[in-house]
Length: 265
Image: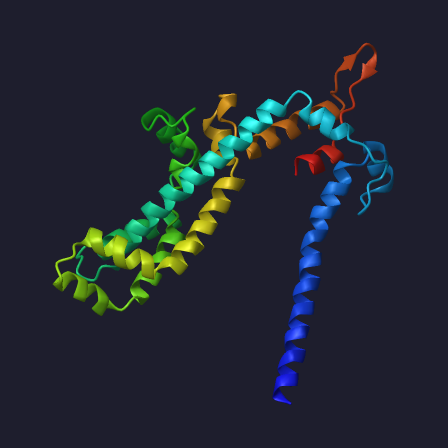
């Protein structure tokens, strides 16, 4: 009887997960359908799960002259995400380890130093001047991830994982002659891999989705990430689709707007 109840409950859970998966896929299907629809049908009839007036015109409009730039922007996003995630995870875990070491006298000072930045900041203008005039991060690859290499929230999250590791393990390693560098890489990192995976995921998503740093620090198109390129292209399309659209040969330029959003998504 107990086995039958467990199987029934398991089937119920699988059904719930399947329904939830379909719901999560719905926006993706809607985006694909919208990108393959005509702008006039979308404007008149709205979105649907089946293309309205099936066409590839939007993709031809977007990628006809921008294919190389889009490919380069994708490559830049991948590079920034990989380098940024590796750098951020290394810095975050190192800082977290420092404030979790019981014998370190200044651990509370450094913990408060990091926490203080969560409450107060210098503002956008001082940050911009510091990044460009003093750190020279403008139009550089490292400028696309260096400002994000330490998230205080994720650092404290990782520090809590390190504190959950029994201190006796660390003491045994120290008795055997292991230094902090050996303890960090051979004990803390392997035992804290759950927290390591967690913060790596958060950092990867942050670097992949970010367009603020390119917006503030980059003017060289070769350093555009795919997110900032999409933002830039949508701004241009929005302008052309507005009342300020230019006239060529007496005809008003009317680029796809809604379908372009779906295609770029």
